[in-house]
Image (cartoon, rainbow, N blue to C red; front, side, top):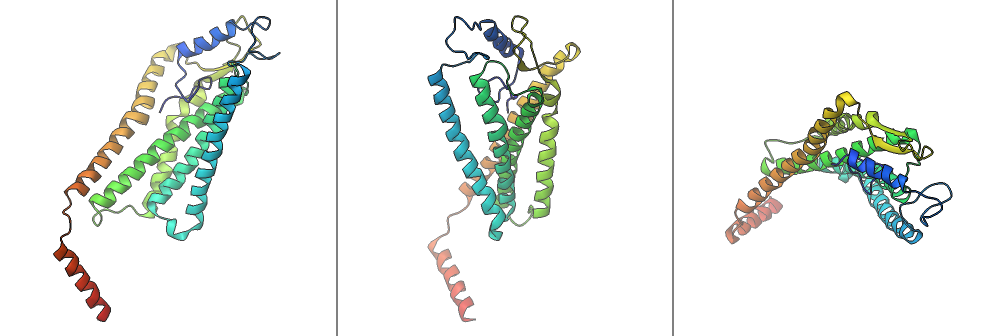
Length: 269
């Protein structure tokens, strides 16, 4: 998972070169000479580009909300759907809804306007919820992979009960909240461009004494814990499943006949 940058086209890490690019764009803002501006705020795109962008984002948002809400309703209402796997899928749908609300919509605004227009409070809330939701989505995918692997590899020896699943779900949400915590601390909004003091930007600013920590956090907390490690676990789980299924012997005709005979005897007994 990449660190959410509220001024980029997707939830990417707000590093200094990108932040400087945003400020440089503000430097080039000239209400007289440019045609891609409003009376108050500079725009990134012309009108036709904004229309296409809004339509694309709207389609993704609508279908995403409908699909994830359908999952929530089905798992919640149908008793037979209340399985361990579906508990993980339910929470995955919740995390995906948070991604739609706090990643898709704010980034649509950031792709339209050059400055940050959502206020100082949302400058801290939006990146944090972005980080939590994306991290939770990743680890629920890991949980689903591990649960499927255990069910196929050790169907009788090990079982994940509903009580254990609830504990895993709580742990994933708490872990996601902890991993994303620095984003709520170090994202700030303000007039960082001295030539345009009326324009505010939302960027990631670490104290000078913690500049090295920002690199460590990106490499360990972001790249490794939210990408390399989950991807490795998922690959190992599905490789284990593949080898298990691939090496399983195909039942012969005599096996099918024996099972059919047992089934018939059980009916007459």
